[in-house]
Length: 62
Image (cartoon, rainbow, N blue to C red; front, side, top):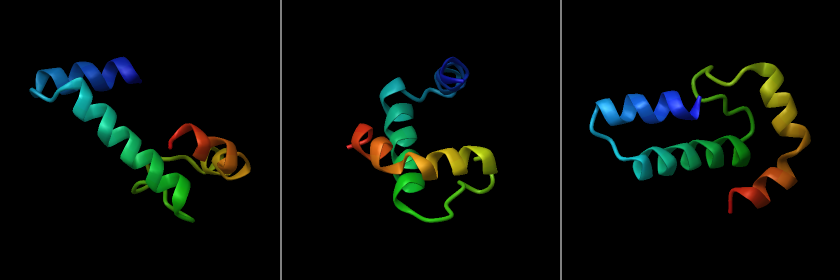
């Protein structure tokens, strides 16, 4: 998925740095909010997995 995002961004003139910043912002939103699913783009099973591992994941996204 990363490669797809980078290829689409490049076609639109968006830098890799900007894509990474936005991805980290979305990750932070999901990790620090209850019920955040980014408009339905995060599957329920993924949200359950994230919920079980939030403390560990939060350390990775500091």
